Length: 223
Image (cartoon, rainbow, N blue to C red; front, side, top):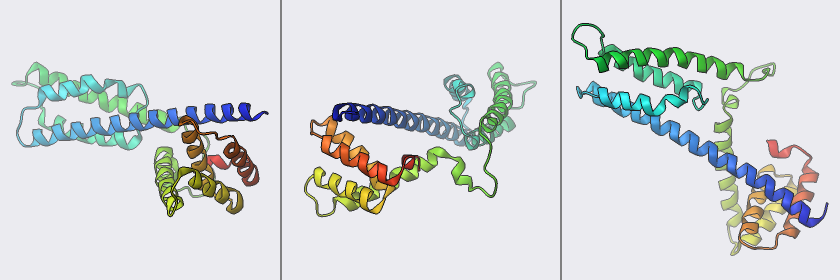
């Protein structure tokens, strides 16, 4: 493989990777914002404010969550807990408005569909490894969040005493190759892509990255 082909392969890989990261982050933030909004509505309701219309608007704006697999099991549990509070205050029957009756039915639908979504999320998982498994390992997004936090710390350490990003890239590649540092390997790939996007000649760095990856062994980027 020529240097140009190697660079194009790396660029394509990183572009795909970064696009997925951004998409996951945006989706996750949207879910958290939506749940927090529902929580705010619940607090207003407990204070005696009529929030019937706001709850109806919330349902209309978030019904897609029941079919697009945006929610984690913990999200579903939190939403159902909040909705159960509304349900306790909305007693259908004589004196209730059509809007209240509709919301009561919608809460029931969310509860039933939410259980199906939760079960689907569990059934989609592959066979579990034998032996005890840390519950944190089941949450790949949380794992990646921690990885990003750790990479940020590694980057700050690498920047200490440096005046240019190229020097940082050199140190990271050295740590990846000599020390077998996986975080340095991943972070150096980020830096190289950044340099490429800003017009730097990165062929020598791509070569060093490949060398470090070969030394560490295939599959290290999965960690």
